Image (tube, rainbow, N blue to C red):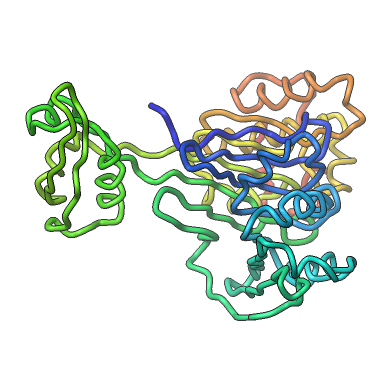
Length: 362
């Protein structure tokens, strides 16, 4: 079945992290993290409607300027979401430039910037090219659980993990997809057409049974048009299938608290993009840097029930050994036996209440 999402890493695993999620047939895309974006051509950046930044370390946020340079004067709006302090941090980036001309651009660019607090409330501000990107319209927002963005076809959820600072982990969820039974469609005496999208949207939104749907279609007899209710048309829906779920997890330490957070966010995810910064032989260095080893990443992926994984965000020290990092992560996820020995107790420095959990890891 064709899904709404098509996701791919922006760079190779040893360069800046970032995920580009194309929304098929929607002529737009989502972007997760703003590191080095040079691999994305302008046509792809211009499709971006929403940006989600895990945290504002340079390798996750330095590409904002590049994105802004491409869309300025060409695009009317982008929504950007991140964690605590994000509105002020983005304001500082904008104030570093001189904006004495942009108010005359024919296309006004509005940056709708949202920061999520660790306490469940957030802040929203607006920056417009018409006013030289002056900060305006501050308002407090209440989060709906862990939902960061929600619309008819999909939602984005996020929860904070510990990277010695709050860092957002994300899941992009395609909403349930009504599947059409073509034999039942033929029995109604109608044919496929753009009206099917209207019907599916109405069903997803829980529209009342008497909601009218205008049917237009063309066959060998010519053009046709009629109006049927959602209730009448619901009989052609064979079933509703679950949508695709994609996880994006980067920059976190190996801890039981982080695992529990990811289990709640990602349980049974179809595809998981997860950082695998160091080989497990270098786990002491990973601990100092608050990052995962490849084996830890694969083990977490197995624990949350990920159906497929894509390891990324490898340390540049492994540029010539990237396949080894991938293999270690994949072996841990699949339940294979990694090359290295048992987990060093140093993996869990400070985790005094989770000894049995530590021993459970291969």
